[in-house]
Length: 285
Image 1 (tube, rainbow, N blue to C red):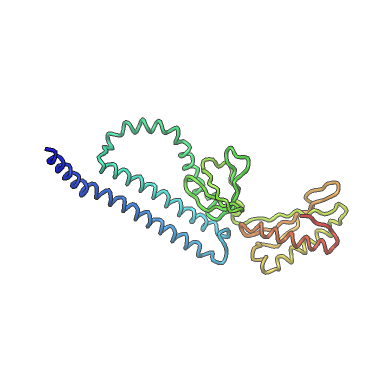
Image 2 (image 1 turned 90 degrees about the horizontal axis):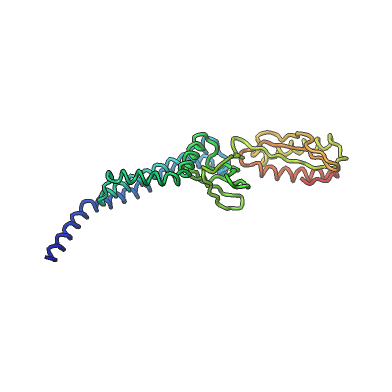
């Protein structure tokens, strides 16, 4: 009797393995292959976008290219999430679970988890609007104010999904920000950027003379081949910005390529310091 039951069980398992078991294996293999294919297509698209900027870096991109890069990542993430969910349902069916009988328990469980899932839904909706409104894209330099955080997250956007945004800080740190917690986004590299330099000089200095020196520095900087490639126009002198008892600040600004304001600002400070020193004026910008 025991042998008959064992043979019957073995036969049933063999039939299941040849039928539903094989289908489960094929579903999982198909899911893995589709995941690799989708990732391959995404990487090929992003490489094609990057190929248009081989002479520059990831910060200097057109707004359309940055948006396409981010969109490719988001679409791939959404498609793969849906595929994983559907394959999981099919596997459960073949394991003998009656999904129709799980409707009532699922409704109760869904209501219970709904309160906990609010944050996830908030993240997904916020990510959707971030992408569709083109607030930032891959390669943008951003400063993000986060709920409950006094210090904003700052860095270069390395990855964007509907749920999180990944930044790389200037120190090389990777920062993950939940999209639902974003309060304000400051995009420092959209279309163009501005380098602002406050030049402190003694209150006894001749303002007209200082302005003339700064205009000369701006003209020479714009004539420099290396700097001109980063500048959109010649740096300009805005004039007196601040005044104290013993010091006054004169502001100089320059429009630059997106993400290049820091490099241009450092170079202009060096040139301004050298020019003022030649004229016998101290400068501590």
